[in-house]
Picture 1: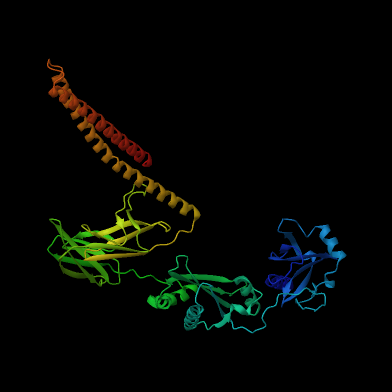
Picture 2 (picture 1 turned 90 degrees about the vertical axis):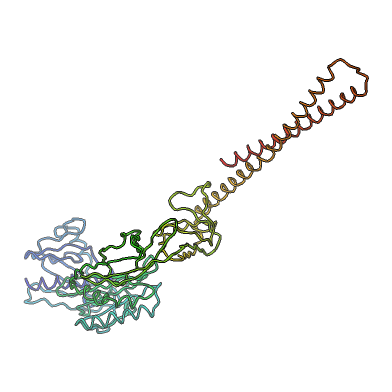
Length: 525
């Protein structure tokens, strides 16, 4: 039975290199219980023909039908008892179209050979280079500087060698026929390579960091053992970040299957006292920690910056200090507070962006705090946020820490809008806001004509009152032809005319004001 098992192992290990499928893939099970997958070519004269590539040549292995328990394709069809498969194989000889090798079921051991044929199907071209037992493949991302990728590759290769696994550096370009890792892996495996490393360095979606992924494929038996590890490093200083805290070294160890022990760091404590006492202690990521003097725990291992501020009678005193935490011990800080007048200076590029509160939605009625560049006095340090809006640019939500120092400067580069829907929505908001502004302006302008019109109406009513007084005098008995009487008649008429004119002017002005107010009210809704 040994030669049957050997033949099937050869078929399975070689079939993955096939450029074309010569028969359906099938699950093969021998009477001995061995199970494998191979290409089923057919059955001829009670002999089962299984195919695959060995040493880059398509090879047919023939084994007596009586040695098989079952041959089932992926659709669940029993090919061992399928008469159609037997007939199809009998009609066409595989030897006429393939470079074939025959295994004699009566032989003591299995021998597999290949015979070149002018009609043989071409197998994929695989490099004839002799490779070391360990190889290292690197990929270069198209959005990554090639010199940087080579430096990371070289550093990783050296660390792999120092870890006890001397590797041969291989370029992906040596496998032009391969489009993925699996193809390269199979090609190297066919060359006797036992350990394969793949490294991929690429830029993360955020753009400010790089991802380094290392994969080890180890062939100790027929099936490979695979380990993967990945780290993120800063895009601005990738090499120094990769070597800090042995991160690249740990990446190599994890890719080799080493489980790293994580040491639990001892707690660190910080004691802060201020002059005067009772100051609020803060740090850039925490609004308020405690009131001085106080002690609190920190998990940081690098230097930490703290701020203190004290408010009294609308005046502020503040200070800042930094400390390097001591694992398992308490670091002490003493701060003497000074009189300060904190300001926040907000700058944008381009300028003239409107500044809105971030705790409420922006509508056409929202009132801006100002336009950039602007400075604001601060009476309560800590975390704060605003929304910056400028026509043609994306809204920017800016969150920042207001330190109890003289000035905190916030600089923001606005990003242009590209989405047609977003541009349309912003244009509608600007239009509605302008209409609201026009409405408020018209409503304000309406006050003047209404006030002046009311004044004219008041003066006109006074003229009417004077005219009535004269009319009462004229109704008294007297000489109607006298000069004094005629003079009063004329004055009465003049006062009545003046009153009419003033009332007309006043009514017109009041009407105009009401029209302006109505238009303004219309534009505000």
